[in-house]
Image 1: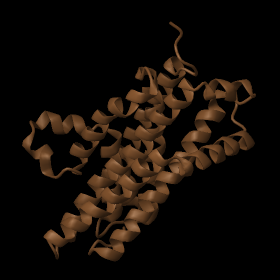
Image 2 (image 1 turned 180 degrees about the vertical axis):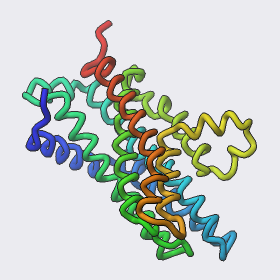
Image 3 (image 1 turned 45 degrees about the vertical axis):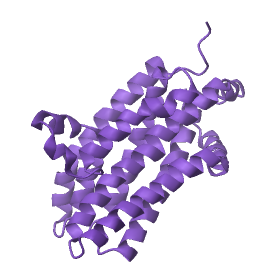
Image 4 (image 1 turned 30 degrees about the vertical axis):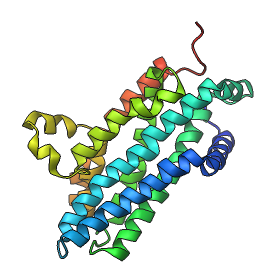
Length: 258
């Protein structure tokens, strides 16, 4: 089973059209991401002016939350809805392979999420004392790679979701864990036992934040950045492998029959 560029692009365009026409998506994935991504760091900048490191910490913490909302949660809701409506089954009957369908939907959400992350970042550079990353390429690479991995995990989780209505509820715990672990809700992790922080550091969102910190560091070299990004990259690769294995074995293209 292979992926063709034409089919991948067709599914991606189909997903993009539905993405921007869906009022629920616009109010959650888009509006909520922009509101949180810009609002919380901007508030922190006003509360503690002259402390760009505080704004950066808040920005990266909220970035993890944005990526979770726009990728992990969004693809879980999208795929379960299309599964329950038998759209996925019809797409396969039309000649599209499973890889075409999942690959196109993931590509679409990665593009949309990257645009959201860039919009949030540019707004914060203009409105706060936050400076652009020293290594923007590293930052962009990990936003894209992290979005793709989170999409894969969201697709894998659909096997646990009995129907589309409960998808947001089932994905909410991961959103909360990602926010706490990355500092999106403030230094809550410091109030928890040390082992909890160690576990949260294993999340893919923690790897994205760690690499982003390297990109935002005041000094560094290309070789140093690559060494520092090696562990986050390995973490994302492991999660991607786990997600792909789960999708291969458990992903369902139609609702279960009684």
